[in-house]
Length: 182
Image (cartoon, rainbow, N blue to C red; front, side, top):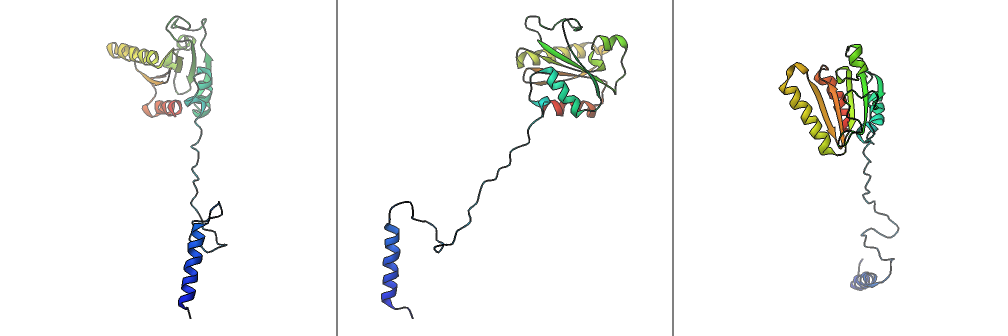
């Protein structure tokens, strides 16, 4: 039987335990020796994006795209000698570029020699995102004004412009976009 004196003693012990100082004081309502489980944060890190969605080096991006899109048959680094646009390295133009031949497309020898986007895709690195977007807008406006020139899918990520052949089906071009933008 619980007597009033035992209740008073229990109250005194509990109040003294609350007055103790130091780091031993537990604010847990569990009995001594019993640990209370606590919630822990186990936030999983998001998967790392491939180089095609993070690098600003056109050659690295092209290699990464090739590892994700099996139809990319050939990659050619654009140089002053093979740049049919004659823009590489010129003031305010792209300073690096890579071409990718897509096996789903047929193209003439001259188009392939010129590294024409009608044979696949090209990545151009511009001084800024605004410059890359301006180039994409220029191309789209020119193609709209002169439909005989065909079509092209253009995707901008940071200061890179990915130009994809318009003869690819939209779902095929989407492969490039998804791999490029992450």
